[in-house]
Length: 89
Image: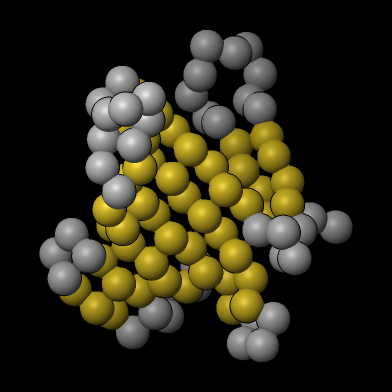
């Protein structure tokens, strides 16, 4: 059984494409424009049993920057928003 699921809810396709990933592999997605891209990663920490996320701006075809926007646990118990410097949990 897959641990993580991803989908593209709005696209030019008539059906919604999906992706699945196991806890051991994690899931990485990228959404891009000609100004840069946003990358979202999901990973499982086997020691704590928690699922973690990270959201970064990344370059795309020579445009954009590397910048971490947020990290934390998927359940919301811990998070960090670098854009505002806020820490929750």
